[in-house]
Image 1 (cartoon, helix red, strand yellow):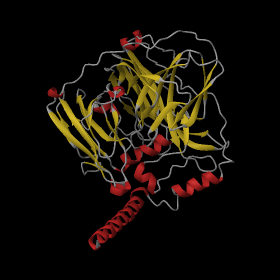
Image 2 (spheres, helix red, strand yellow):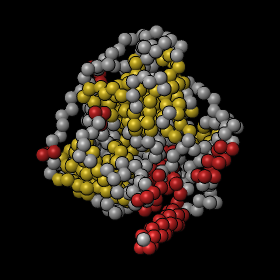
Image 3 (tube, one colour):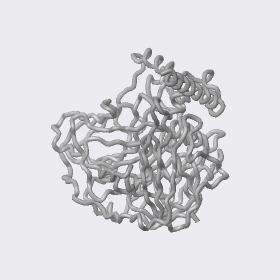
Image 4 (cartoon, helix red, strand yellow):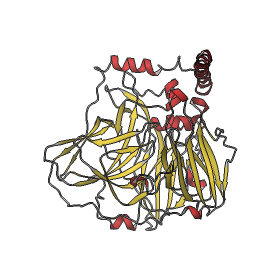
Length: 494
C-alpha cells in the first residue's frame, strides 16, 4: 500500500513538473504571455462579464466572388491574388485588424478546370511580413506547392505555373510560412479553390454558384471584450491549438441565407485553426454527402451529422423541398446554432440525389512498395512527429517518383490521466485512400480521396497513395499552432 501511495505521489509530481517545463518552454518559443495578452481563463471571465455588451448584427451570408481569369486562351488561366492587411467589424461596431486576399478578410474563389495550365500571380502587400500561399489538396510539383520554402517577401510577387491534373474537388488555399501559419490564417488569409471536370459537368446536381451551390468557410474565433480578435497563446492553446467560442461563416457571425424549397449544394470547409466541428440541422433534416477532400465519392452517403477536422472539406446536398415555406432551419455545431436558412420561394429547379457520382479505382495494398510509420508525439511546444521537430534543412523521407506506399499514422501524444489530443494529419501534393482505422474499414464518407484525416488519441490510421508529383513537400498536424511549434516534417519525391 505504501509503495502504491509513493508511486502515485511520484506520478503527480512528474505531471506537475511536465506542466512547469512546458510553461517555460512555451515562454521561450512563443514569447512572454502574461504581458501581452490575457490567459484563457481571464479572457473567458472577461467575455462572460461583457457578454451583454458584445453584439453582432445578423446579416445575409456573404458569398465570396469568383476570381476573374484574365487569360483569354481556352486551355490556360491566369489569376491575380494580393495578400494584404485590412480591418473588419465583427462585433460591437469595432474594427479589428485582419488580413485578406484581394480584400480585408478571406479571399475570392479560384475556379479551374482539369487539364488547364494555370498561372497565379501572388503579390505580398503585407506590411514588413513574409508569407507564402499553399494550394491545399492540389497535386502539383513541389516548386509550385507554396510551402515554407516558397516565401514571398513584402512587396514581391510569386507566380507559379502548373497544369491541373486531378478530379473535380473543393480545395482551398492559405499561407504556410514557418512558425507563422496559425496567426496569418486566423487573421483571415484563406480562400477556396474549385476544380471542375467532365464528371462535375455531367452530374445533375446544383451548380449555379451563389444561388444553389454555396461555399461555407466555417471558423471559430476568440474576441476580446471590445470586439477585436484575441489571438493569444496561453497554456491551453499551446496544448490543443487556438479554439474559439464564436462561429463565423464566410467571415460573418450568425448569418442567414434565403433558400427556395429545393435542393441546394453546400461546399463546407473547416477553416479553423484547431477545432473539430460536428455539424447538423436542428430540424433533424438528413443530408447526403457527395464529396470529401479530394473530390466526389462513388455514391452519396445519407447522414444526419458531419464531423470535420481542421482543413477537411465536404460537399453535401440538402433538400429543402419538404420544408414548409416560411420555416427557419438552423445549422448547428455541437447543438449550438451558428447559421440560419430561411425557406422562402418555390423550387426553381427540381433536383434529386444521384444514385452514383463517379468511379474511384481502389489502390490495392499489394501495389505498395513500402510502409512508413508516422507517430504524433509530445505536448505543447514539444509536439513532434517520430521524435523530430521541423527542420527546413532536413529531408525526413525520400520517395521514388511513381511509387505507391502505405503510411501508418499513429497518435501517441496522450497525456496518461490527463487525456490526449486529436491530431489531423495532412500531406502536401498527394491524395490518399484510407485503408482502415485500427484495422476497421473507414466510414462510407471516408472512402473517397482524402488529403487530411483525423487521428484520435491511441489510434492508427493506414492510408495508401501513389506519389506522382516530384519535389519537396510537407506532412504535418493541421492544428496550426502544432504545425508552428514543429509538428511537421518533409518528404522529397524524386
